[in-house]
Length: 184
Image (tube, rainbow, N blue to C red):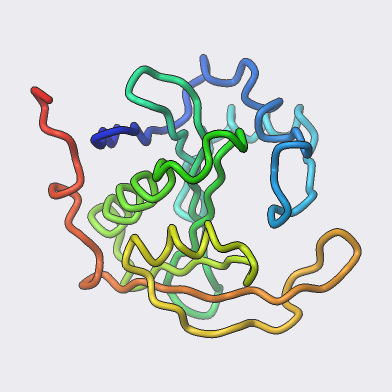
């Protein structure tokens, strides 16, 4: 469990499943830049029961406040089959929770953890070019803008560009610097 100053980033527990699918699948709250994909709840639960959403190629952690309120999630997956590296994604569930620094802290903790626990030199992330909030999260966490992937993503009936960001191991803050003190 990654305990920050304001958020906790942890693996998903069986007890978290109640109501979590509804938070993830509600297209009314995803915002303008999150893909409109809805998987089946039974497949979603089956995958959790098989591996807890934590494998070498994919991992999802829940983001909560220090009191346990579910705020969002972060995840990683293999960026490419042709080179070693990870890509991350993240989402705040409720629009009223956005813009408060929650995801900047969660992504910072998550990236620091991934570099501490896994043998990768690079982590990348993609954001819609118009998604100012998501791009700001990446920049606050030390990611560098690399360029635009033209018409790389199909969503809502059209192809859109994606902004590519990355961070290298030596550019990330150390995990110990981001964790809250045990007595704090």
